Length: 381
Ligand SMILES: *Cc1c(COP(=O)(O)O)cnc(C)c1O
Image 1 (cartoon, rainbow, N blue to C red):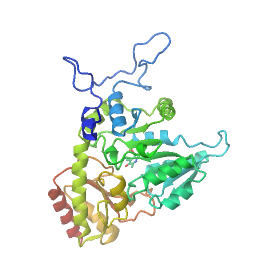
Image 2 (spheres, rainbow, N blue to C red):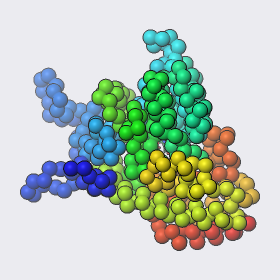
Image 3 (cartoon, protein in one colour):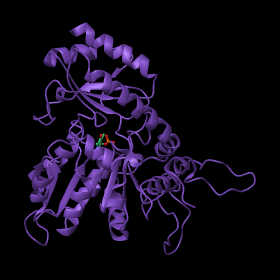
Image 4 (cartoon, rainbow, N blue to C red):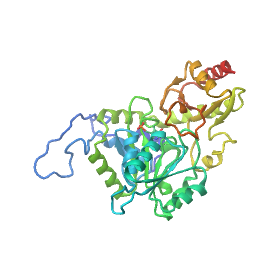
C-alpha cells in the first residue's frame, strides 16, 4: 500500500501487532548481546548495531523513499564525515587527494570539515554559488564528490537539484545532499538521482531541541555497506535513548513542519513590508530569487527566514536582545522559535552579510510571534 508521508511518519517502525505487545519499540540498553561461536548476522555488539536504531532507520528510509533503511549517527557532523569519506584522500591509489565541490554558503561546520580535508588530506575543495547552475556544472568537471545543500544554511539559496544531480551523474561525480532544511517532506533527492542524502536529525526530524543526532540514507547497497562500515570503524554512534527520542519526535514531523512553514510564510510576507526591514529572504516570497525553483521542486518552502534589519549589525543585535518569545540560540528546527546573527561566529562565510539574522520559525501562535518580532523591530527603528 502506498502511504502518504504523514501516515508513514506515524506508522513506520512500529513493533509487530501481537496481543499484549507494545505499540512503541522498547529502548534496549545493552552494550553487548549473547553470542558464542562464529558470529552470524544477529546482534553482537552495540557499536555495530542495536535494535533501538532500527525503527528510526526504517522510518527515515521510508520517508526519503529509499530502498534501504537510513543509517543513524551520533550527530549530523558524524553523518557528513561518513558521507565525505567517499572523497579520495592523498596517499591513496592516485597519490593526490580527490576533488570536492561544496556550496560557498552551507552549514559552516561542513565547510570547516571540507577545509580540514584540504589541509590534512590533499583534497581540492571547489566552493561554488549553488544557485548558479552553470558555475556548479563547470566545477563538477573532474570532481569526485559534490556536497549539495538546498536551501542553503543560512542564505536560503535554492539549487536546481534535478539539473545538478543529472549533470553530476553524467560526469560520474558522487552526490551527497544535505536535506536538513527541506526535510524529507519538502524534497527527496534520492528520487532525483542523489547518491547519499543526509540529515542533522538534531533539527526538524527530532524537532524538540533535546538530542544531537544525524543520519545518512542511500539507495545503493554498496554505499550503504560502506557507510555502515564507516560508522562501526569510526565509532560515531548514537545512544539508544536518543534515537528513541528522535523516533518519538518524528511521529509529529508533518504537523510541526506544516505549522512552522505556514507561520514562516506569514511572517516573511509581513517582514517584507516592514519599515525596519532592509531585506528578507524566504523562498515563499514571489520576489525571492529562489521562489520559482523552490515552487517547482519542493513541497513547501521551509521554515527558516533570513532577515536584515535597517541599521546593520547594531540593529540586528538589538533586535535579538529586545525579543521575549523568540529564543536567542544557535541550531534550528525545534518547536520553539529561535534566532541568531550568523556572523557572530568568526567561522561563518565572509560573504554572509554581517547583519543577517537567521530565524528558525517554530510552531507557536503566529500572531504572538509577530507581535514579539514587530515590537523588537520597532524598538530599534
Ligand atoms: C546543524 C546542521 C548540521 C550539523 O548537524 P549536527 O547535528 O549539529 O552535527 C549539518 N547540516 C545542516 C544544514 C545543519 O543545519
